[in-house]
Amino acid sequence: MKLYQMTAHQLHQLLLRKEVTSREITQSVLQRVEEVEGRIHAFITLTPEMALEQAAAADRRIQKGEAGPMTGIPVAIKDVICTQGVLTTCGSHILENFIPPYDATVTQKLKAAGAVFIGKTNMDEFAMGSSTENSFYGPTRNPWDLARIPGGSSGGSAAAVAADECIVSLGSDTGGSIRQPAACCGVVGMKPTYGRVSRYGLVAFASSLDQIGPFSKDVQDSALLLKVISGHEPRDSTSVDLPVPDYPQALVEDLRGMVLGVPRETFAQGVDPRVAGSVGEAIEVLKKLGAKTVDVSLPHGNYALAVYYLIAPCEASSNLARYDGVKYGFRARGTDDLLDMYQETRWQGFGAEVKRRIMLGTYALSAGYYDAYYLKASRVRTLIRKDFEEAFQRCDVLVLPTAPTPAFRIGEKMDDPLQMYLSDIFTIPCNLAGLPGLSLPCGFTAEGLPIGLQVLGNFFQEEKILRVAWAFEQNTDHHRRKPNL
Image 1 (cartoon, rainbow, N blue to C red):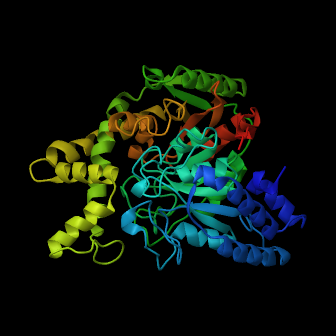
Image 2 (cartoon, rainbow, N blue to C red):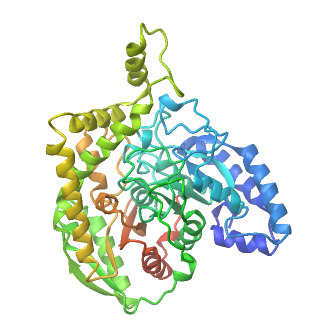
Image 3 (cartoon, rainbow, N blue to C red):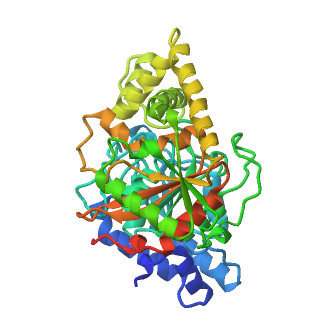
């Protein structure tokens, strides 16, 4: 097995035994990037010089006996997370020259842990999309089928892990933007509880929904990376001051006593039969491992998509008002006056999907419409959260499909926004409630396209999710399959 194909925990053991150096691992990954990146386009910015410098520093730490689980491990970071001195574009023309003067909290934590930064990954512009086709820098391609999307908006981070262009990566999840691309690319992707991981330095899309989380090749790596990036951050008012559990300790194979809730609505009309079949088989595996299942209902889940596409655009309309061409970022030239400069900057700087959501949000927040749209959506959001609270009185975790279909073809849904939005129908309720969730591979179609199983937990119960996911993974081999590149 090549070094770039290995997991972080495997490489950590090699590093501890001095059988390999971080520099050798990093060079292996950079060589892999050189081989396949032209076909995948997972990255917007690559940082090979920084990576080799950090690898050298990691090797010095290891020699001193100061190695943690992420020391010397090559990591890719979604281009919506601030990295001091490194271009952070959010996949947008309007930020094509923005270099942050500070690090996000998660970036600081990774640096403190001795991680190696390979580069910044491609994404739907300002994290608005489900396919990574909305990037100013062009689409990312799915390593399993280069004619198909990798999911979105964190498609670059998912594809980079699937194609072995990094060992682990970070993404952000506002309505499924970690879990859905993880399902499309056949990797593990986790959205922590809202407030578990600091959003300081995450460029905001919808502030009440956004959360940073890990992508990895297996569940153990997600547990390791989640432990590194979690924790309270005073600079983030939504960060929760709770102790961070030792997530890897939750990885026990015994599921006896665990109760899995199966939301009956998620297997209704609209789910691809191949997805329903693979998820059904995965549930049977979990039952054989000792778990019990109960049917649960999330009756207000049918409204989740409509609620999300009011709340998220309203928050985006407010958050993106700061991009006006005055303080930083792109500025339109040749304009006549200040108002003209504002209008031309935003017209030229934003892509079609971002404009669509800004206009939807501005309309819903405008005088006379706030109560009818945003306020009503907020009330239904509360009902969705109560549905989950009632469900978790009967079960430990929920198990359901991550996405209703496998990855679709590039361009297939670009002219039909509503069909595109339906890609997140099973992931959005989790964000509206602020719950943690994870996607892991549970099968493949006849064409070799990955299918994702989603596991949702109650607030700050990531350990239960990881336990169920790890037990399933240890008794299947879906995560061991690799795309043929």
